[in-house]
Length: 233
Figure 1 (cartoon, rainbow, N blue to C red):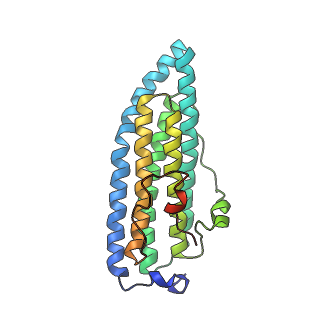
Figure 2: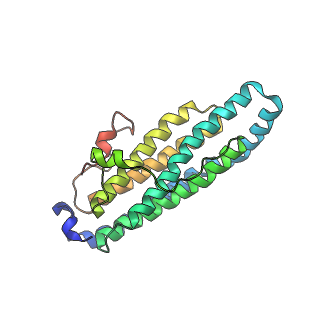
Figure 3: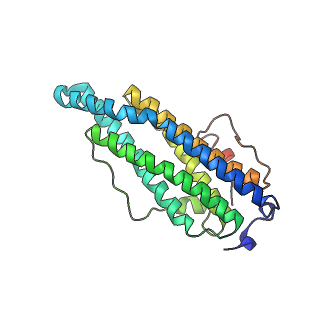
């Protein structure tokens, strides 16, 4: 892949400076993800204690643990998908400054998702559930068909990552409301914030490369504002 596949508005002389800004942005997003998950780390021990009580007492608390385990298992599925998607897309990136900048973001975001995955596995297990296993591959055709990104250029791979991170933020924000353990609700909300930070970092990369878009295009990250966050092919 080479610059011929890039949009004209991204073939900018600012690319060298942009790469450094993008890498810093990726680091910031990684820190947000790690700090956000300190709450979930603490919640894992609390969840284990709650799970033991649930097994002994049954009833409402047992159903709450089962409810929360199922919801978090759904989140775990998408963490597996995100890790796979970043790995699959990385092999298609070019060796240009733009490709290297996108790769830096991809690696930082993927590292956060690995932390998400490991902690979700722990919490689901502590709640008495069986963590869902990673699959060999995942179907991203819906994203490609909607024009929410692609695998044919550095720019389109970045757009695909943006769409995936936006959907992750939306999913976490909506699903945490269904959790019944207060500590896990707080931790889940911090994950949603980390996913939104990932999406903002990718948008910052496009801005660094000369694309005139706002860093934060809407006051909310939701299904209603999704189209404002993603960038179409």
